[in-house]
Image (cartoon, rainbow, N blue to C red):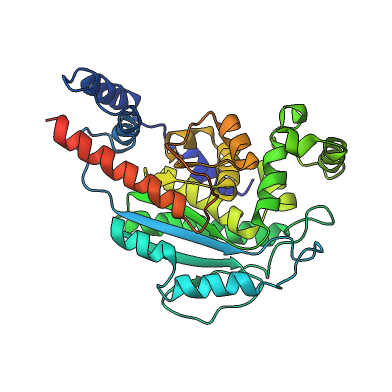
Length: 333
């Protein structure tokens, strides 16, 4: 492992369990019973920030943009749809911009690997390491250098946000065919347990084909960096770095859909302590997302019938954190 990355991982401390327990006990002793979801988040906040009286959260939503499997045969738009969506956000006109404004969160769009280039502007950071990841069934998704460049961009982002005073980050993604990457990364974590996957993923010849791909390509979650390089993507690599850096800086991280969830799985495989800093948000009906929640042992707070990207679910999660902070300061005098 890269020595700098190893140093960062080793510096990630567990949250203050005593302070979290104190928060839970104080809330449980109140005459008026508190919402269980907010109480859970309150304990997490208390443990991470080591206080029962946290200040108002300084929030940012980081949208990591990249196209996936650009040489996989399903690339019909050549990145044009992703570029249009990215330009809308970069210009401040996206749905996430409006939601973020309402909850007092900044929005950052980071081009990690869009197939088409974006013009330089205040609304986008060009951190591109490649023009879309490769299709993992044909070749490695990224080179070692591409993966590490993206990962270190995420590490630097988390550190920069901490230095600027941010205390909570919502993760979002933008890009075509990203669910394909999230699926294979997640399935690799069920290696040896593929029969437990939802029937929609194992019916017919799908299970045998999936087993063959995972074995032939040697997708092994016990070596998360190798799995990331072989089957991942630059946006997911950057999210992994951001999660690790945020945890080292005692920042809360909220994630939402299967793409951001894939990054959480990989970051957790590198450092299980990140569990203390990561919070789910929305519950999707999408099977890959549900697989991730099972593996992570998490139950999201808000159920949605549709799958959201571009950080919309994470924005909802940030509002839950805000509500938990208010509950703590209102009730824990």
